[in-house]
Image 1 (cartoon, rainbow, N blue to C red):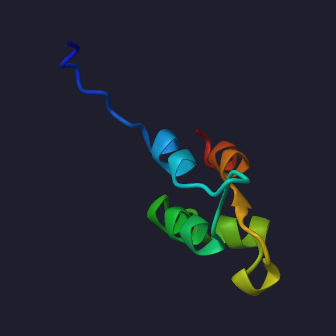
Image 2: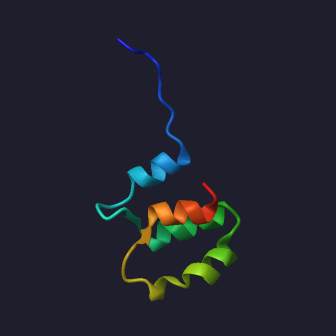
Length: 67
């Protein structure tokens, strides 16, 4: 029996919470951007929530964040 604990990285966590298409909601992406202190850059790159009818691609978003 392996008793080692595995630690989820932020990237793992975000991808794990994406939908079946690999997307997270704009609201989640906006909140993550705020926590990473890049909200103004996020809005400049992705626009405002009213511009989105679908989710934000989680993998692309992680790359944009620098992960």
